[in-house]
Length: 250
Length: 191
Image (cartoon, rainbow over the protein chains, first blue to last red):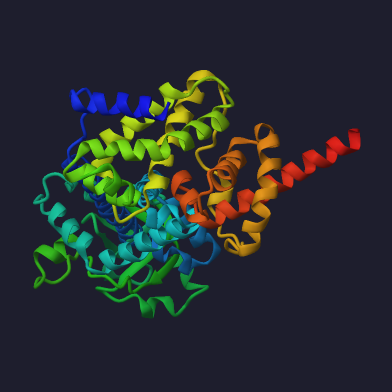
């Protein structure tokens, strides 16, 4: 019986009914897996670092400085669609990595934790490298053709009552705020002075600030203000284009 | 190369010869694995009928893909992997036997001791029991039992065939044996 099957198979090989796939097919397959992993990794690094950037640029990342209310603001500011896409990318990476024995011989938890740690720390490194800040600045100068719209909607996830900007002028009960979108608003903080008399001293022209307050038209009624060092060099566009000019006055 | 010379070579050496110089050397691998794969097919698919067509398809798949085999690895897990996938496809056509894509046992690490010498002593006794009750187990427990006890692959090789962590093989074998013991106990109580 053994001879019979062997002969059948060898006969099919001999007459060319059955042929080996060429080596390059397998090399190509492995290459495509590796390429897929690299592509998914780069995309996830970009996306996660972009999420961090949008949260920082909109001021949402600094919002927890306002306490519980700020934490709530950060939560509602999270770009859930981008987060879901990042999770999908991580799952794709896990599935691709599982093709290799180094991953499938170990519990899924190990490879998954490695991918999550790589994506998170890698994204922090990309964020620190100011890639998005550079792209953001180019987008504002209309010099970023494809990704431009993505950067110009950087603060679309944040709630309407959170405002980040730089103080242009300060009076005894209000200030002029210039945002990263290069719009100006008048911020009234009179109601806060009774509770925080030292506030006026802290509000200096050119200081970056974060405000929680209702905006009607171009007027914001501040419910809380923080002078905040955002740890980045994102300035309103006016400052960026004319860095030597004094701040706008109204 | 003569038949005697080929017979003296390992599976992996023969595979290398098939890949590079002599396709007819594949016949030696067919001789070595035909009975094993027939037995595996019968146990996996619970059929008593002739398995020649199935086994032939597996060998042809193996031959077609043989250049994808890395001869620095073991050949037996590789061909069993092809057979395993082929049988799963055959089962899908035959009946609906669900096999989960993600199993919790493969997610977390398990503190299971590796294969021991005692395992091998017990193996022969357990083998008979397993053959008797195999069909009553879930596929995820049945597969490692078959490969480890009946096909006599190592934990590492079973892990490579099923593409699961090595420690999960240990967990599944223990749970499978516990289930068989439970079945035997229940049957004895009925008697």
